Amino acid sequence: MGFFQRHNEISVQTIRRLPQYLRILYNLHGYGRELVSSTALAQETQLLPIVIKKDLQAIGAPSKLRAGFKVAGTIAAIEKFLGWNNLNKAFLVGAGHLGSALLGFQGFKNHGLEIVAAFDTRSEVVGSFLHGIRVYHTAQLASIIEKENLKIAILAVPAEAAQGITDTLVAAGIKAIWNFAPVNLTVPEGVRVQKEDLSAGLAELCAKLR
Image (cartoon, rainbow, N blue to C red; front, side):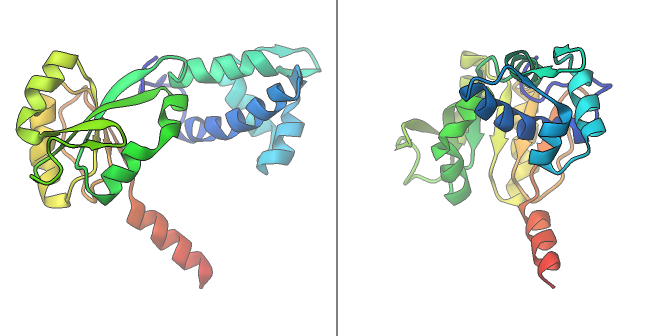
């Protein structure tokens, strides 16, 4: 299963909880633990054991009767479901401050994503390398997407430019867009969009301080 792909019967809430379980399981595996109960995971996550049990059963995590889930097998099940056991190539559009920070994040490879190219329109960055990744002019988008057979785009551009670039990406065959632009994108059926609304997260944080 590739990046952004998911089974229709698995809820978004379950999918968002899986990386949290995975971090705990990695630590347990490092300590040599072979089994873990949903109750033990609940103590670490502050979630109900029944929620965790249903989440892990939904993705086919292996368990041992009355002993809990098999740590190594559950890690493998989560990684397979999320597509993190395969490395998917992606590219970034918009190599500004946010885009540059995303290029510099090394953790993406641990989550099955490798950024292989970046695009921008500014002459001062086009042709340069940011965090070891070549920055091309956005006019080269279609040709490089076709040449490298890329299917995943990360969008970190201003709101006013986002839809136009999205139309170009869709026409070039892109199937998944991770959108950091503060705008809702219109895409045809068959193209998946995951929006990361930083302002919404900040609003929620500030509201909790009041």
